[in-house]
Image 1 (cartoon, rainbow, N blue to C red):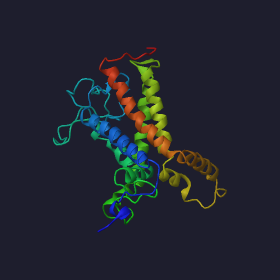
Image 2: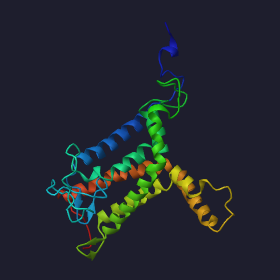
Image 3: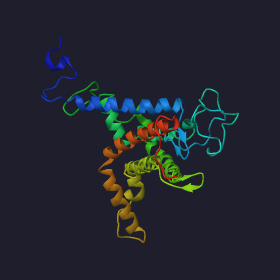
Image 4: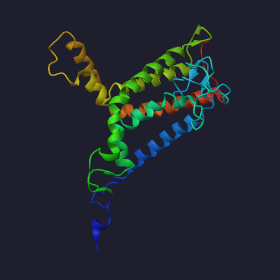
Length: 268
């Protein structure tokens, strides 16, 4: 029979409410990822010219006869979903390219630490033992985390596509203008850029393999790229949360405008 702290894997001598941070992290991740997953399966009111929700951007394919507020066929890169599209996969633009963003986020170094502590309880907090008494590293099933260095390239591609959509939001029916949605989409691209370019894998890619920053013609540029990425990397947690929240808020805004719930203020 065990007594005292040995009987409770979460027992601790800490007098503070140590469980608040991991509980809030778990709740926030579940809420935001859950919402975006729901929107991926139910892409209604994701478009209002010239705004497109980041939940389905970039829209490579779109349903030919989609739900209300779906991306029009002439805006999708390759038009309507082809006949060969598997029937078990919903005809949602989110399942063509935007799913790469999920892979990139799930394998992100910050998010790993966040959901390891909050969801897997390894450990739930400093000086709190948690469930697992042995840390085996990212082996066995966790080997998929090594995809992060490759998912980076997908993340960079999506970043370019989202900037394209943000810049396209300045034009409606060929006329230049600015709307509230334009600003929302530009902020979304800025926050995603700040998070992506502060990524550990990106920081290593631009200069991590250099032993000498004063050697060679390209050293100065790579040094400044490394300095900039390092500044963003120090704030990686901040941009990780801000970008994730803003993706959801951008989708909510497009939904509200597309459904006619609110009116977009613009100069067109």
